[in-house]
Image 1: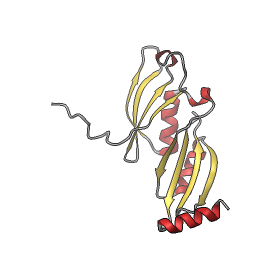
Image 2: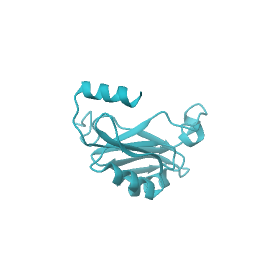
Image 3: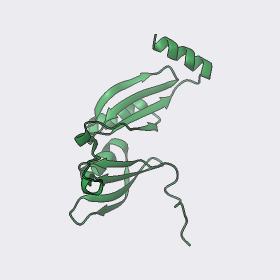
Amino acid sequence: MAKAIPDDVRGIIPHLVVGDGARAIEFYKVAFGAEEVSRMPAPDGRLLHAMLRIGDACVYLCDDFPEMCGGMSRDPQKLGASPVVIHRYVEDCDAAVKRAADAGATVTMAPEDMFWGDRFGTVQDPFGHTWSFATHVRDLTPEEIMEAGRAAFG
């Protein structure tokens, strides 16, 4: 009997829509160390579905199919932005941001130590998605974080 939830896809899975799925897969391999698990092309050659693994997380990916969404695009580049940020804790925030930038991402926030105890930075990938990276560097109490946050925002 089939499992209701397969072992390799637990938790919340980001499902990214992009303008060029095949190119995005190659970028994510270089920028984030993604492993391609599966790929299913549509009859017209667009990417219908792909499953990638980045670290121990699963990410789904597909090309934009506006005809399946009432004529509306979901490609962040066509929309001009995406309201979603994909976040990942890593061993070395600076190295993760540099690797992404070297692969073609745009650094939107250089890594810096943040008031909540993480070293944190963000990039925008060439497909319009924002990724944030953090390395936890200091343990703080909730009170210390609140006080540091008040000081940071003046």
